[in-house]
Figure 1 (tube, rainbow, N blue to C red):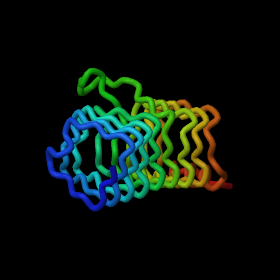
Figure 2: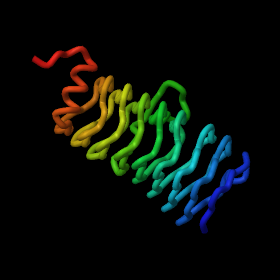
Figure 3: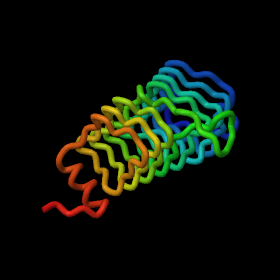
Length: 191
């Protein structure tokens, strides 16, 4: 089923399951997606501003040119989703252990793609991002705290001011320009 130019109301999608659906230019403004599940869905130029994502799951979904900014993914399940060309500014990607506010569990995002996305100011905490692609992404001021960034591809990404505190950066890929921008944003000067 295809949905085009829909503005979903607060409880319209709550607790529903969607499979192989296409959402084009839809608005989820303040929509309650609690207990909803989306599998193999495509969200083309959709706006999730202020959506309520509580115990929501996304599996094999694609979000091209969609706005998913200012969202907290602490109780959201994400598996093998493609966020290429999405705008996900100031998001928090982390998982809470049994809904405890201070305890986190590993958030497995290893099958996801963030190529050409805008993740400025977003925070990833205790995430498994092994082999994830961030090519051409904008990560200005983004933070990766206690993440596994093994073999992550940051080539041609803008990583100015990005932090990788306490993260595994084994075989992490940076191009020369990204390396220089990252160094300059940390106060280093190329001699």
